[in-house]
Length: 542
Ligand code: GLA
Image (cartoon, rainbow, N blue to C red; front, side):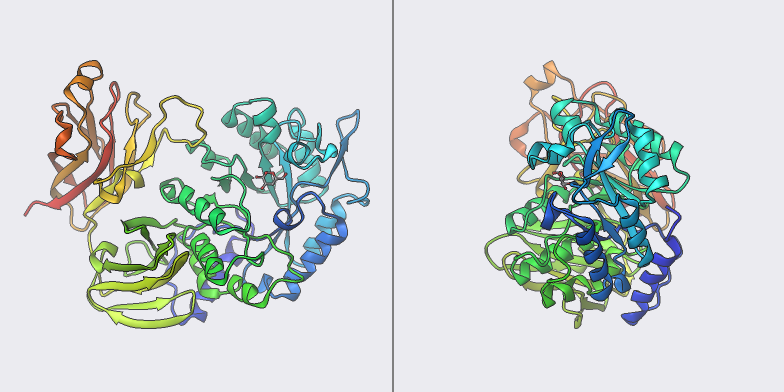
């Protein structure tokens, strides 16, 4: 996306300055989308008048001033497809067609979003008894509809759902979305922002096609739903980046969650770099919810020019610590979330070294917008049930990382579609670092784990320890396991692996050369499975 890049970045800069800091970042990417969408509150019961009123409210509530720009029309506008294949809008809900609506949104200085379906029948036709949703999807009408949506009507964004395509036609996701995106690119010279809605991480092909993709089934305004979606996105940070994002679904802020749950919902969507699409009625939004949605420090966290999704660095007593670089990669400023999904208060103690920081560290609470006392050894906070503490920390020195978790790697063969018998997957494992391992790795040259940013300050010789779950001798006889470790293209094969599984996690040691700066480490096994992988650690050899 070129459109709006400069303006959005300027806004992020402005927000940074508003909170009293200079933003020294040049390497920026397009940030997650911000706006409003009709689905959560209105489902298919939308109309021209309703959409215009919500667009007006975006302005009157000052949401455009803090970065919310898209007004997205979800399911419900469809009328029918005529004998020439031309799509018509709903005669009562949108009697004047969609161009007037998109024009109106644009006249307010906002951007306009539309919705369709990869198959023939919409989700609304299946789940909301919307008969007008039958036969109006993109299947077979890709070019014709793309021309209508983007050239004739002038929309800037599209969300493409998968109800008819999946439940009724059982089409292949990658093929289907590729055909649609190719058609859009052929027909429309503008850069359209595209969201793929398949309710699970669809596979690594998706970032070549879409700005964002849903990773869960639909949100609803309950704590259980918010917690479930955060859990779905915990290990997907390697798949986001470069201006492409995991979409945690539209916000349920202003729709009845408790205040601390709203903070957790918004704060976690921000630090995990999800698109921020408000889902409530903007004309009646409660004051506190509006204030939260306009919190400039959380918005700056979400719209940070690096566009990184936070990763988990600690998982203890039910609590999770997430961290990400902001403003500058490998700088001294980082954002941290202490997230407590449990029903008990969680006492967090996070050594600064875990955040790769050292020395006197300034701490600022981004939710409540206040400075905390500086620390020099650890962050210590009690977080209430369903709560989160989100802080920006600025240390005196940035440390070299020592631990690389398998569950944080880019898993080239991963998807969450549950269609493959033995797909690579995340698996909780007690005793593993981070309590999580990666299973079903290997067996094919493309089924590997990769860490693109293995960092060495000076470069040189390192001891590398790879931790894995031993496979038993018996299992090994029927299914040999190996670990192929490739560092910057140089491969070492470890095939004499531990077979005594009573000893807990096993480890293999090897010597590696790292170059100064970033290194690429890949672990897989081209012709056999690898054992389940926990992590690797690096220590410089003096
Ligand atoms: C699916 C999507 C929702 C919404 C509805 C519309 O359920 O996941 O976000 O777009 O379809 O029918």
